[in-house]
Image (cartoon, rainbow, N blue to C red; front, side, top):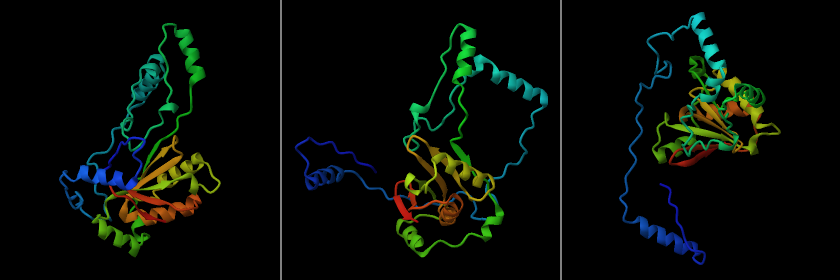
Length: 243
């Protein structure tokens, strides 16, 4: 639980502020977090989720209709935003980098505006798919991390995230690392991973199961040529491990 304490300018004694916060929170009930239990079988050799049916196939006629629909000026102006992380504090989207087109009555001026304001699409999320061949390459977790998991009572299938910060770039740009990372995920080199880039903060977050976290970190260091220290962050527990 996060606590925000507001105090006056002349009340700057840390001990006194801590005492006030403890006295305020003393009346609140304490609830112990339940143990994490996976909702799927712990069989690493099989994919826990597998669709029963194959994906639908679009005909050539349907593809042409979709292309015509997306190339019209009305579709470019009135397309809604489907960003489900827009108002989530955890992801902190870069609202300054967003751009939009204002609808105008004059179609000629609208066409000119679209031609001058087009920007290249930049991917913000990348999701990995299972690779059964990797299970023979993944080593057991280190003793230090196992002790930490026992203390915090965290299951190995709990989700965690590695944070790639500017201190680990090693004379590379954020976009260069992001391109290399997408290539690794495309070739199924990072098990159970999905990644997002936060250009406003200059960071890349890589989410994975704790079971694979050390393998993922070592693979990232080798393939992305990263330096410095990488921190493993778990929601509600903070940084639990560093490599």
